[in-house]
Amino acid sequence: MKPTRFIDLVPHIVLIVGVLIFAYPIYVTLIGSTWDSGTIGRGGLPLWPGGQGMVNYAQAWAGEAGERALYTPVRTMMLNSLVMALSIAVGKIAISILSAYAVAFFRFPLRMAFFWLIFITLMLPVEVRIIPTYKVVADLGLINTYAGLAIPLIASATATLLFRQFFLTIPDELLEAAKIDGAGPVRFFIDVVLPLSRTNIAALFVILFIYGWNQYLWPLLVTSSGDMETIVTGITKMIGTGESANDWHIIMATTVLAMLPPVAVVVLMQRWFVKGLVDSEK
Amino acid sequence: MATVEIRNVRKSYGPVEAIKGIDIAIQDGEFLVLLGPSGCGKSTLLRMVAGLEGITGGQIAIGGRVVNDLDPKDRDIAMVFQNYALYPHMTVFDNMAYGLKIRGIPKAEIRARVDKAANILELGRFLDRRPSQLSGGQRQRVAMGRAIVREPAAFLFDEPLSNLDAKLRTQMRVEIKRLQDRLGITSLYVTHDQVEAMTLADRILVMNHGVAEQIGTPLEVYQRPASLFVAGFIGSPPMNVLDGRIDDHGEVVLVPGGQRLPLPQPRPTDAGRPIKLGIRPEHLAVAAEGFSIEVELVEALGADTVVYGRLPDSETLLVRMAGIPTVRERDRLTVTPQDGALHLFDAVTGRRVE
Ligand SMILES: Nc1ncnc2c1ncn2[C@@H]1O[C@H](COP(=O)(O)OP(=O)(O)OP(=O)(O)O)[C@@H](O)[C@H]1O
Ligand SMILES: [Mg+2]
Image (cartoon, rainbow over all chains, first blue to last red; front, side):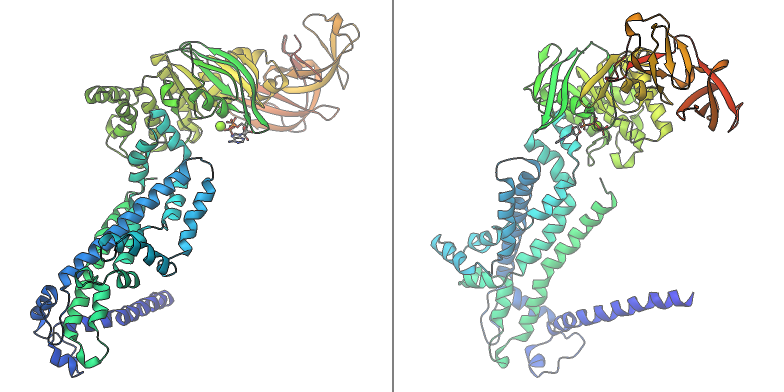
């Protein structure tokens, strides 16, 4: 059975090499966050942990002045990012699932027109409509608010298509059985559609949370005060134009902290996923 | 418990008329089977009774109350679907209890009713399971349990057994029969399986292309089929149909090939009329004279044997004999119909000629 062995081996090697390539920068960041700025500044970052970890993280978290500049504390930026990412994920899921429910289960005039209208928003991500959106948000006085950060990003029902496709796989008989059992549209939605969509919702939540967390351009435009800074924009602002002026040890600690919530969401939701997959209920 | 009256009910999908005026009054506690080939409109009719499909014309009354404009939930019916339609994320208990919960029935009573139904259907052990953890037959029983706990005026079944294998189907058929005897709830049951129809029904409504070809007890439908369609649909193997002509005295039927078959009573008014002659395979028996056939194929079914014979004019004649085969292919055989086994149908309309 030599050939099979060999064939088994190749993908493993490819995967391991891939993991190493992806993991290396993260490793460097982790290590970097445990050395003092002097060591990093000299350009000879060792590949083993240093002793400054606690100090660096405490400094980044609380936002005490670095050696060269004053930053928004990570705890503030994390909170801002968290509020934005959660609002976007929850808001988008709520809007999408409701509109998909309408489009998939009800007959009403211009149903397909509405569906396409929703669908077209897929072609208009924030970057494309950023100037008119900025104008609207500014006129509404939402600059430097959570609403201003989140609402324009919620206002597209990109997940509608996904939910609609899933709803179309729910057999008509289930709806009819519910009708005979006496469930109206709202009850059917809450008692049957929502529980059946659990795994879809979990998957989307992961995707949308990370999408929201990683937003860069929009928060950059719509926030100007330090205490509305999100962590992704915050990190880039820490990196000055001239290399020597950067507190690399704090930047790296901040970066590591910025990675934690998305990682946590993926890990937590993954358990839901698997659970949903194991007791497959259809 | 209630009567169900269907009065000249019609259904159109755009220009297509799926149900072309059906009339039947189903008595309290009666088990009516809607039987017909695929696409004849059985489900459509049932779904109109359920309220899942609008009624284009006519009236449906359940328990004396016209329900045309009522929602399904207000019609006091329960339905069992072909693919069970159980809520996949709910336990067996919750599946059965859901309709009762919505109706605001007290918890203790829900518990009692579900337990009772589970008892009748032997589902007690499965109450905490999800549908995905049950076999097909068990799922179908849960679907019936969901109907029973509602204690409705009428049960509606749409081919509830057609997703089950043959053995289970027989078993469930018996169970449904027993259930019906015990609960005595008016039932409408859609099937295209004639055995289900014959064994379950108090009366059968045979449908074809949206019209009722015949309404009658299983034996009436078998013994006196109202049309060639019913004759061909009920009975297995199907009835033999030969072209014939009543002779000029109205006393015998002439069949091509020279056979003369005496009519039970003379019909002078029909003298010379062309006719379709139906004879059931089980009503043909070997005799000294009669149809002479050459055996083409012998099917031994164990309890009986079906012989495919060819008449001199090359038409096929099926004969069903009791027991194991006594003839072989290429044998010559003479068979004749038993007394009173001739069915006459109009050559043009296919309606039964009495
Ligand atoms: N929504 C619809 N739109 C148009 N035509 C329909 C619709 N539903 C059913 N029909 C037509 O009505 C006729 C009857 O359909 P129905 O489902 O009642 O048949 P059935 O007797 O139940 O057949 P089966 O045994 O295959 O279930 C069919 O010819 C079908 O094509
Ligand atoms: Mg059908």
